[in-house]
Length: 331
Image 1 (cartoon, one colour):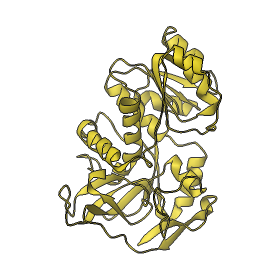
Image 2 (image 1 turned 90 degrees about the vertical axis):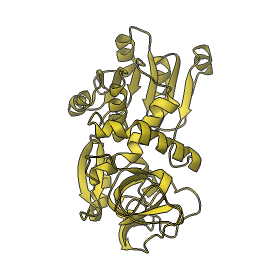
Image 3 (image 1 turned 45 degrees about the vertical axis):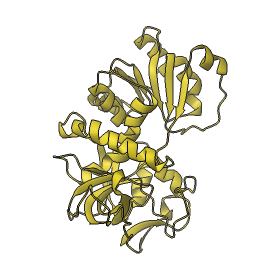
Image 4 (image 1 turned 45 degrees about the horizontal axis):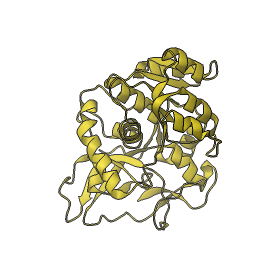
């Protein structure tokens, strides 16, 4: 099968298209003929050698944390899916290929009415946003939420999910084009961080009370203002740290105001916890897609052979929503 392999680490030129053996499904696995995969910030780190796949190093390191496609074959003990089913899946790696193998309980049915290729924009970002909001952030209707990087894949997913359950949402973006985009996703207050600081905006928006939860991808540069922006008993959920991971923290502020700081990552999570999240998502979130209340946000689509250009585009920070990689048109 054709796959993008990391034979070395570095820039986008390290992504090599080559032929490698097709994976074989185990007794509890399904083999997916991949229609599309999608880019994530973690892919850039993996390409640079900073985000290795979990477990034993593979013979061929193929990036890609999600995919959508058609079930091609199933293991002897598989009961949830059959060949020909349309599925989408959260992967530990291997999405940049014509075939991928995953345990059946980590796969999800493609929402009814959604094209299979578009479903590749769902697994990583919507599962991350869903988990960050509800399981890590403790959010519920009426919660005031601040979502940084609102035009990103996870950001656009989080805004939509919060909006659907009556959570007021503030978000930060870096351009006027993105301001208009996130308003369409359901954001109630938008901060262009190139023109104003988000802390003052939070205080004005909440009449000095602060927000109940913050979803952050920036890390170091935003930590102090994030803590100040939280209401008492509020939660900061760290999804990424684009500005760095090391930062000074005043523990007195955390203690006195009973703040919580949760780190989250899906790839390194234990299998049982991933399964629990996937099954929760199938039950609670898939109906939102099928009703049209929530939609994957797709910025651009690249063919697999142009994967390096897709990485360069993601590095430019211009995208609004997901960057898809078309692997096959034969559905």
